[in-house]
Length: 152
Image (tube, rainbow, N blue to C red; front, side, top):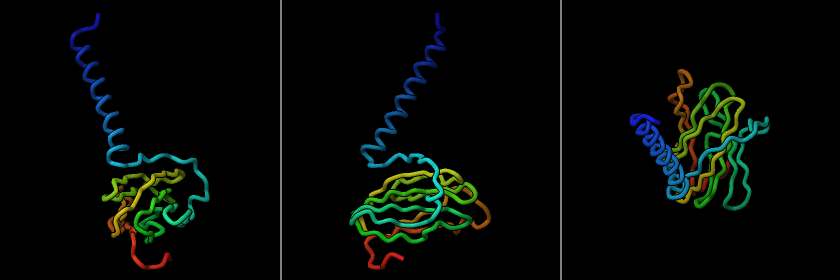
């Protein structure tokens, strides 16, 4: 026979697990957020670049290093879908775009991927949210949407 206290703990644990699963499903569906995934490591991901797949789809290979993201400026048109592939060449860094609910880790030897749609024009700041050394506060990049500057 299970003790009444143990039964309460099991019931509360089950409820907590269900709430957690609901929150994940809510974030993926209602909030239109993509849950980051890990991609098998390949050295080709360590070269920073922007690939244009078609008029509204881009791949950004973002490389974090002390104390910068490369590429530092990403120019795309409004309505674009961007697949971000993030890695680090040295220590652990964060990859955070507040306006888009993007929060990923950039780790050496690991590739993290997420997909984001940029519907509205503007400048979306990318910041590092993991303390990575004395120059951490200056580690930023930008996604510039619908501006008339050419892709560098």
